[in-house]
Each structure stands twice: as C-alpha cells, then as structure tokens.
Image (cartoon, rainbow, N blue to C red):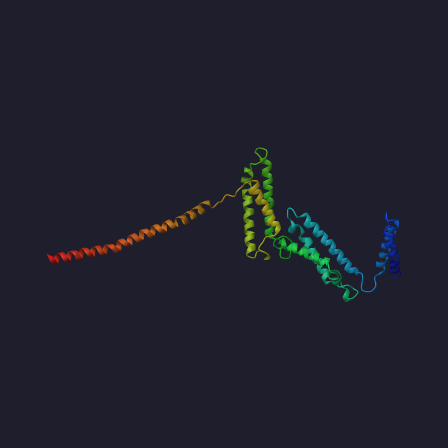
Length: 309
C-alpha cells in the first residue's frame, strides 16, 4: 500500500503545480510531478490491485490481444477491398479467424475463480462492451454484404459458381483491355466497334451466368441464405454492364428475333381473326334461319291461290 499512499500525497502537489499563478505560464514542476505520478501509477498496477479490481489473467490478456490483432487485420482488409468491392473473396479468412477468436473468449475461463473468467472480464465487465460491439459490427457488415452466398457452406472458400463467375468476369475485362489497345491506334476514342464485336460472346456468357445465379438464389440457391447475390458478384456485374452499355455503347443482339416476331405477330392478329370469324359465322347463321321462312311463306301463298281458283 506504500505506492498508493505516496500517490495520494502527491496529488495535492500535482494540482498546485498544474495551477499557474496570475499572468504566469505553467512551471516546469508540473511536468516533473506528472511524470512522477505516472511512474507511481505503473508501480501500483505492477504490484497488483487489491479488492474488487483484479488484473486480467494472463490467458485472458492473450485472448484479448489475439482478438485485437484479428480485428485490426479484418478492418484493414475491408478498407483495402472497399473499391472495387472484393470483401467476400479477400477477407473471408480474416472473418472466420475472428469468429474463432471471439468464440475462444466466450468459452474461456480464467484460472483464479469462476467469478473472474475471461468471458465476464472481457465481454460484460463495463457498459461499453467494446469487444461485443466490434464483433456485432463485423457480423452485421458480413451479413449486409451477403458473403455467405459467395462461399461454401463451411465458409472455407469460394463456391464453384462464384469461381466460375469471377473467371468469366476477368476474361471480359481482359477482352475489353486487349481490344481497346488495338483499336485506339486506328479509330477514334468514341468508336468501340471492335470491343462490341470481339467481346460480345464473353459478355453474353457472363450476363447469362449472372442471371442464372440470381434465379438460383431466389429459389434457395447453393447456400440458401439470401435472395441477393454477394456484394462482390453484384459489384463486378454492375461494373461490367456500365462499361458495356454506357462506355462502349454496345448492345447484345437477340438470337431469337424471328420466333419473337412471329409470336408477337400471332398475338397481335388474334383479335382480328376472332372478330372476322365471329362476323362470318353470324352472317351464315342468319342465312340459315331466314331461308326456311321465305320458303314457308311462298308455299302458303300458292295454297291460297289454288283455293280461290
């Protein structure tokens, strides 16, 4: 308790030293007193705190340091992969590692007693609960990005469909770049005919695969987590579509143009055929109904004439 008594005796002198006289600047004694107070505080914490302020167990300090390092690594990965968005494919190992570290803290128990276990000391010992807050932030960010739809069920790597999509995406960008390099020599910058012509097949495959992935996820998909694709795939497709339609001003020709026109024409002429057939049918029916009446009236007239004759 000697260090604590010395610190209490030093506090009044420190307060007087930090209070400058009228018109004077703070004296150097303030800095000396502050340094001495810091040294005594370190000595106090090193000697061990009495009562209900125990220091973290060595194992708990190790778990907390590991969580802090994992949080820093995941934060750095998310920040570096923010644009273009590559969160799920680049940071899933950091996220999985952080989940394991948080689980270790939640399950760990210190060596001193049951009341001072690591979970209680680290997670719920104060109002702020910074470790819990950080963990919730990372979980909400990961769920908002729908990264589960890009990964395998065990989250150990990218799913097969995601790998296929990213491969086509890279091929599309490579095709754009290759044809732009050869075209700018001969054509004006606003004419991207070669890009539209040579990259049409690759882009169409990419677009079809993206539409299929959307349809699969609406029906439950590979992982069954969300109707949306993960942010990596969505952002990659948005980038490609903007380049294709806005920058290059390309369009995908429809290979089923003739069947579409035929079906549309058939549907368009259905009302005309219906009304025409109705008109002809009603006219023919009238003829069938009127003909017997004329015959019957003529026959009656003949009979009358024969009677009077």
